[in-house]
Length: 395
Image 1: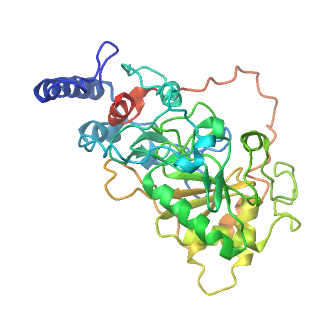
Image 2 (image 1 turned 30 degrees about the vertical axis):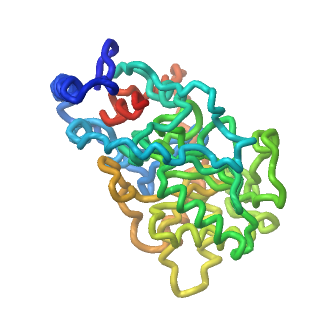
């Protein structure tokens, strides 16, 4: 990874680039080995499933497979170089039919930096990138700490989907994720669901986001609203102002609250849509509110309940469900989560999620001394896989 006064010589001859890459890699490896801690601090032991999900400002416990540092950092440094550039005719924007709602005008600045410092705040650099890295598709790192090369845009309009919140420019993903979404949208009408309203996927080059999610960094996550797509095409203003509808009876953070779904809002068509998504073998997890998980457990009366294992209860997710696919073949350096625990998850685990314990803060035995709020630690470029610097600099 280059220092603040270096750039990758992407336009130079092969021998010059090779020498620069070898020297830069040696310096970075030496610095990283010297800075590695002797022992990593143990993570908190969370309740029953270790999942990583960044909802609106929500980030809980990271499993060991998604932490940065130690052996993971060395593996990132020694990973094979990025694949060769993708063909020039690769589709990187919404198709021509979506031109009136194109997210990034052709004349807009790409946001590609000239150089990257290891100390730079990663979300500022990735959040400024307006175009994807012109490289072969590859998801790099973990869902909550990584980036993406060769992203494909989900067109803002499709036969059975519409993208929401266009100003965010977060309709980018690994081509495998785009295919999962398009296939789900194609199946939706036969399930009694008119079409998908699609929320955030990832930024053009993935990476940490300037706001919102802690995950969605490697182009393998997508939010799908639980509000059906209307029969007409929404305007740009409507896509910014329209709100998704909560499926719950009421707030979850009150003592003794009923955290189930509202039968006046929840329908079996929503359950069929989530089931179809979970039945795609490429889907690794689907995050929903525990009340929605409860409704799905009751909905499935057939003998095959295996798909319910993928549906994981998590904070938030009462107005959308979050689809996460596994690392696609060929994504060198992409880190999957551990598989979900065995079983359908409809027993003791779900009962805990529906209890007061995850939601209602316990009162301290005695008043705590006032303290300054902890300052959020920003993810620096040095905490991401080394290949993410190459992704940022690719032109």
